[in-house]
Length: 93
Ligand SMILES: [Zn+2]
Image 1 (tube, rainbow, N blue to C red):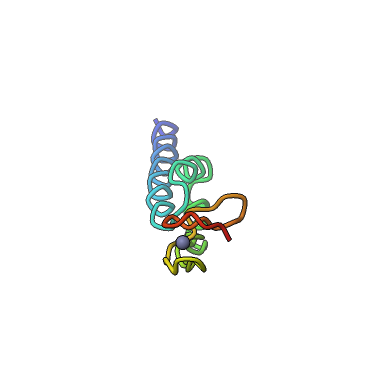
Image 2 (cartoon, helix red, strand yellow):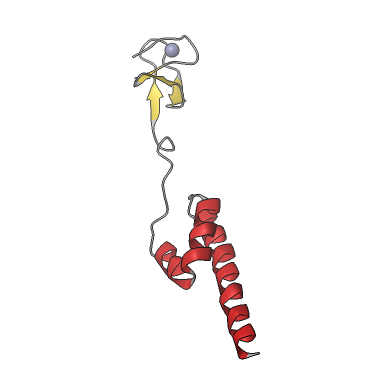
């Protein structure tokens, strides 16, 4: 009987940690699925580890280019072989 209660507590804290990790990972721009798994395995330790992690910044968020040819401003989403490709005039630089 006591073992049943104990394993129920262990199982539910694992599930709770998994769900909490997924939610926190999502808010921090990390993989919710991966962190849900980590939370299930490591429980509250994973929650603490994730809480201490900085928010991952999207790399292309703040980088914008101005095309030297047509002066069109765009973000660096259009990239071929480390070169920026202007979506307006097709200029590579
Ligand atoms: Zn251009």
